[in-house]
Length: 265
Image 1 (cartoon, rainbow, N blue to C red):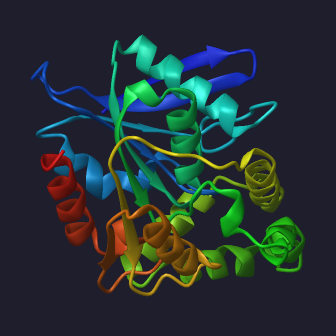
Image 2: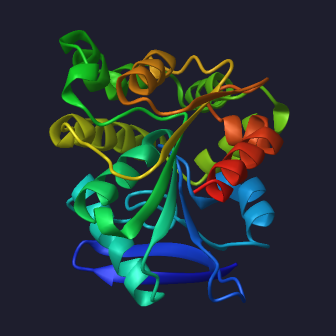
């Protein structure tokens, strides 16, 4: 993949693109989760690059897209729009993993005519009715709780909690490696705080698919996904043998589900 970047007054956003030689090929944008980076989708990039143009990026405040000021999901959507403009790409299929679902949904809110479909991968919905006051309170405590852990234990516990396979565990540790404990806590507080501020009721007029790891025990992701699917009628598929980092734990099934969904558009 070719590494590129775009610049705004808030910072430089880095992205990686593999452009398919077929000019009619659809474009998939993969957006990673909290404290992670573009490497999160290494098992998806190779699979989908044969048929699609593929973009993976370091969300502002993450990976190489640091430093970044004035983080918000609205601003991340603007950075993604700039990336697509630089690549002359009109419409995209969004794949958002965990926190990556929030920039994806915000982009869909701001630029709905540019979205062909959204794959929600172990993430949770925009919508005020899904999150109780208790839920909101706990989201505000994530950074505080993280401070209680010694640095090495924090990294290992974070990696262990999202994975079922050694590959997923090792990859999560690798993505955390460049970050200091202060960086990790900053990302947690800003990302979850931003979600609480920017969460809103939405209605999407394009196909949405929800994928959920069989053993995803991160927060209340499972409950939110089930409520989301029931409320909106979106298809919900369980990824066998996978935890929260399902696209690493069971890339074969995740890739098959995404590909089948896209082919059915």
